[in-house]
Amino acid sequence: MENSQAKNENKFRSGYVALIGLPNVGKSTLLNQLLGYKVAIATPKPQTTRFPIRGVLTGENFQIIFVDTPGIHDAKDLFNKIMVEQALKAIEEVDSIVFIIDVSNRNPKAEEKIIDILRKANKPAILALNKIDLVKKGELLPIIDYFSQIYPFKAIVPISALERDGLEELVKEIVETLPEGPMYYDPDTLTDQPQRLLAAEIIREKVFMLTRQEIPYATAVVVEEFQEDPERNLIIIQATIYVEKDSQKGIVIGKGGQMLKKIGTLAREELEFLFGKRVHLDLWVKVLKGWRKEEKLLRRLGFPGV
Ligand SMILES: Nc1nc2c(ncn2[C@@H]2O[C@H](COP(=O)(O)OP(=O)(O)OP(=O)(O)O)[C@@H](O)[C@H]2O)c(=O)[nH]1
Ligand SMILES: [Mg+2]
Image 1 (cartoon, rainbow, N blue to C red):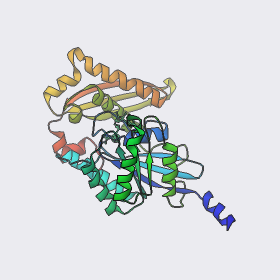
Image 2: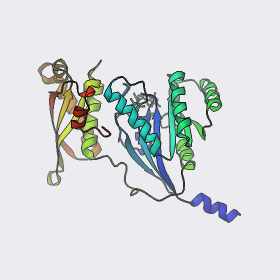
Image 3: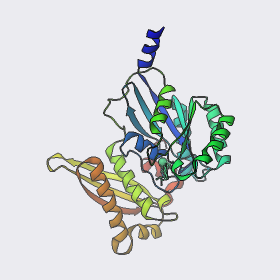
Image 4: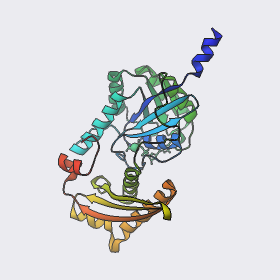
C-alpha cells in the first residue's frame, strides 16, 4: 500500500491549462511570472491580450502548458468578438482551467458569467484570487466564502502575480488537476510562439503604454522582416504599425517623429534583453481603414483564428 502510494506521487503529470478571466485581472502577468520570462505582453489597459499564447512550465515531475487568453468581455465589434471566441475555444481544448479574478476590482456580475462558462466546460477549475498585495488580508475571507459557495473549485488560491506571492501553491494545485502524461515539450522550451510574433507584441505593448484613448485599440503590428545575423549577434527587424485612421497615424508618429522614436527605442531595448542579441528595429506607420471590422483585413494582418 505504502509502496503504491509512493509510486503515485512520483508519476509524471502533464497537460494544458487555460488562464481565463475578465480583462486586466493579471492573466498575462501571471504567465510571465510563472515562467520567469516574458512571453505575453501585459499593460495597465484592458484587452491587451488578443489571441491565446502558450507558455510551458516544466518541473521535476510535471509539465504544464499554460494557455493565456484574451479577457472575456461583452464584445462589440468583430475583432473583439473574435478575441473572446478564442478564449472560449481555448477552454474547450485544455485539461483544466485557472480562473483569475482581481480582488482589488471586483465585478461579480461579469464574474458569474464566467462561472457559467466553467459550469458548461465541466473541467477541473482552480480560482486564483490575484492582486492580494492591493487589499487587506481581512477582505479575502468573504471573497473565498462567496466563491466556494457558488462553484466547486478544486482549490482557491490567493496570489500576487506581481510579487510572485502564492505561485508555488498555485502550481502545486494545478499539477493535481492534471492527468498522468508525457513531456510534450523539451524541458528548455518556454513557448511555441515564434520570436517574430513576440517582437510584434512587444512593439504593440509600447504603443499601449505610450498612447491613450482609442489609439491602442486601433493599433495592430506586423513584423515584415526578421533576419538574424549570427556573425554580428544581431537581429534586423522591420515592422509596420497599422492604425485605423489618418489622424491616428499622426499621433503614433508624433511631433517630429518623437512618439515613434520612443516606441522604437523602448521596444528595441526590451527585445535586446529578451533575445540576448543586438536588435536593429525599423518601424513604419500605415493606415488600414477599419481593420477591426473586416474579416478580410484581420486575415491580412495575420490574426490567428480569423
Ligand atoms: N498590484 C498588482 N498588479 C497586478 C498584479 N498582477 C497584474 N497586475 C497589473 O494588472 C495590469 C493588467 O495585467 P495583465 O497581465 O495585462 O492583465 P490581463 O488579465 O492579461 O489583461 P488582458 O490581456 O487585457 O485581458 C497590469 O498593469 C499588471 O501590472 C498583482 O498581483 N498586483
Ligand atoms: Mg493579457
